[in-house]
Length: 206
Image (cartoon, rainbow, N blue to C red; front, side):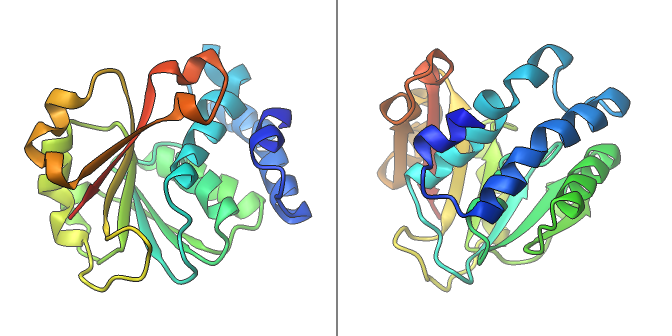
């Protein structure tokens, strides 16, 4: 948890408690249902929680914003973001039922009230959202094709509605078709740890 407080020193007591509970919950669930690589569970806060919170380095969602986390797996980036933004609604979607179950149980255990869950493929989700967030589930063009239908036209945030995803490596070619609408932010500018050297937040307005 120290690594989270290093970069997010203004968390409320409740947020600290919720984030602090994640390690034991994920370790326990991971022993039953593999949602995080067994080798990586020790790096939960750096590789999963802090990485998820990297999205907050490009946008502070306004209260009342609706966000879908597509391909959430065990709840990343949705659960850490829901803790950070308690007045924002998060809808976590994944096509693998047992992963949705883990995310649901974790959220219930820490008393998160601003999250909903759905076991479905992205194509099946018809609701409208201000933003879709995702952790590198597929190439940008494929992702945009699927989620364009889910982006609301009503604007209420400093950034226009769109897609925000966490990706690594070289993204210039992938982002090329959307280059006038794309912002690529390197997390190495925010976080000192080596893990973030190649990690980026990619925002595309839709």
